[in-house]
Image 1 (cartoon, rainbow, N blue to C red):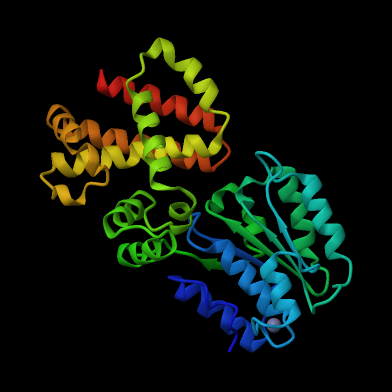
Image 2 (cartoon, helix red, strand yellow; image 1 turned 90 degrees about the vertical axis):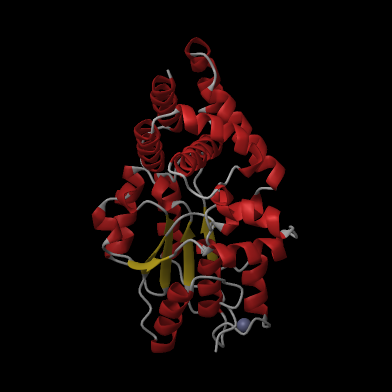
Length: 322
Ligand SMILES: [Zn+2]
């Protein structure tokens, strides 16, 4: 059996589906790896490529396997957005390369990371390749928000779903890979909600700093907000970090306001402040805030600019607090 999928943890469904396709030789030309970031979508795409490019289906030892793992196999192409978007020029380059014969392996594999950041012209260009896939070419689209792509593109891809890891699994993995103590690992696992890749990228101190920055922004006077948002809003990752911090903050407030167990609170280091705020805030206001953050997150994953998503959220949250 292929060794390629051994490093993938917590995605038994996705791995079983890919193994089955490989075993039966029913390899679709296009795949959509759907799920939140940080749960192993890219790792799995590379493992899939390894299984396809290794002469024995992913032995883990041959030159082909080693080249895939080291990231320089000539038949594996990883495409990431150029700046904020995956552009038509990038898709045209994929189209050009896909038309050529594989150099070393049996396939040419193209992994399009953050495919939901594809521009509409790029998606239309990709549709052409999907409709008439060159022989021996395989595309893997990695995305979190399927609605960001035209349905005509997605309907031509074989879907593979990825899920966040369970808390116990995430804690064990973070403790082992990031060498954290059990308490620190638990906090980090909750903050990244089973999206372990996020937990591994961020050290706990950076995550706390991002949270503090986001909460400080909540208290910023409205007149001073535009300048702060202008600076922060250009960086999608920081806006997402803010929205995530607000989500957990208000979720904690809801937990306490509803008389929940304080041990379930994510921001355990600010428990007293949470208690005071929860007492002073009506539950309906907390629920509305959560709805508004959720909508902003969805907008941010779609085509709305991160700056605008953050601005709308902050104005709504400021009004609620007032
Ligand atoms: Zn091999």
